Figure 1 (spheres, helix red, strand yellow):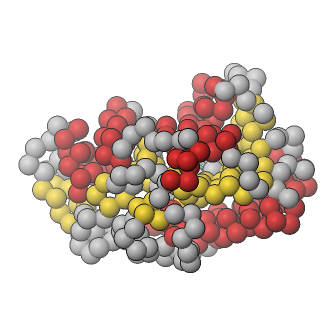
Figure 2: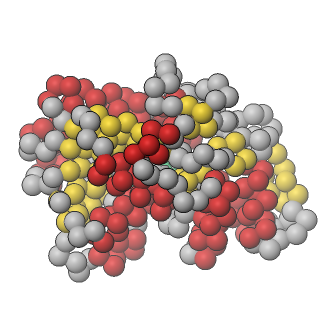
Length: 312
Ligand code: NAD
């Protein structure tokens, strides 16, 4: 299989590239290196089954040219920082629906019909205190990032309905692990390295979310792709447990062997405007296919803390 991976130099994308290469697939990694890094894929540079293209998905002509002759597109690139939308209100419009349109249109012109998309559970918006399944609605995101994801999903669905594409859309829980560059774990470790006596925690610390290890997410992406064959395959990808922000702080303190750290909460139920403070995903649909996460949320968090500490 010839795979075109957008965001292949990023956290999740690079693990996906590794997995596809290990399976014997040919991979083009297309990335503008805005948050991705070259060092992440240096082990593949001399592999004939790997090609890297440094370019921007906003450049339609370049996408049309580079996407030629692939069998499937894994669209993983995006602005990964949910909070940035507060300050840069155009960002998620460009990095959500506009780049997704550029990819879909390039696929249409080159007769590529299969797309796999990394969406997010934030498309559900503020939800009741139940595990949310793929059929939950109305989906009303509360962040610009979430709106960008939902619009991209809409375009993908429309290209399926209008041009007979086939799609796999995954709504991820929070993803953690080695090569992670942002998020609560990286933030806490950086803060504690600066000041090992006190840790500022955004919100009241009771925000509670499922955390999935990156190895599980990549496994789930490939598993769903290989084992479902509807025209539009929509899956939540997460785990059945969750972890509070205070618990993450305790685990980071423990793994860093610190004592008597004072937790200083900024207050309020959410970490920032647009943050969904509590959610739980119903992952029974992908489980019925035969996939299961191999780490609980707490296990994934602890494993990720060790990985980030050992690979700064
Ligand atoms: P990341 O920043 O590590 O990876 C994104 C990659 O896309 C980077 O390498 C970046 O350079 C590249 N990129 C961004 N804009 C681009 C553009 N216009 N053209 C070309 N390349 C571009 O982020 P990540 O955490 O690996 O996230 C990967 C995907 O998973 C994103 O779509 C993100 O929204 C989604 N997601 C992540 C999480 C999580 O917890 N990390 C949760 C839900 C969904």
